Length: 123
Image (cartoon, rainbow, N blue to C red; front, side, top):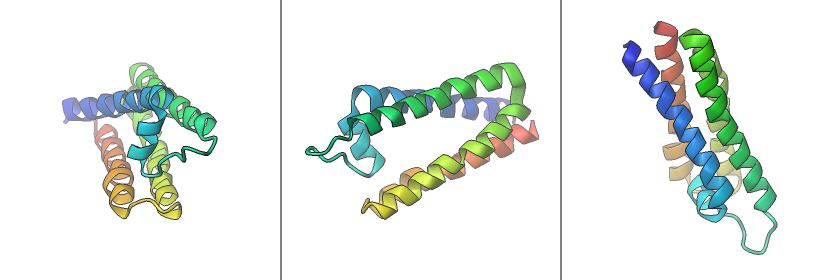
């Protein structure tokens, strides 16, 4: 179980780094994948960059906590961070996004993050 807990935590943190990169360097495609596409006539660039910085920073912080604080500290971080994909679910739903994306991507991610927290608490 220890290998699974650490592997899942590392994978989730690396995924956050990837999402951050994508929102910073491919914002249009990333926004579409998020479930609420950026409007071509709007000024969404700053907000997409903010999301990219947020996600990338979460990945770095997660890896740092895992390396320096261990499984228990990472478990608390994951438990707290699960609020973000739950919130993203609501954002997509409130802004006319597809339910399949809201639940299949964001809600599912929140559940996976909670599973990761549980596995890390069990280590």
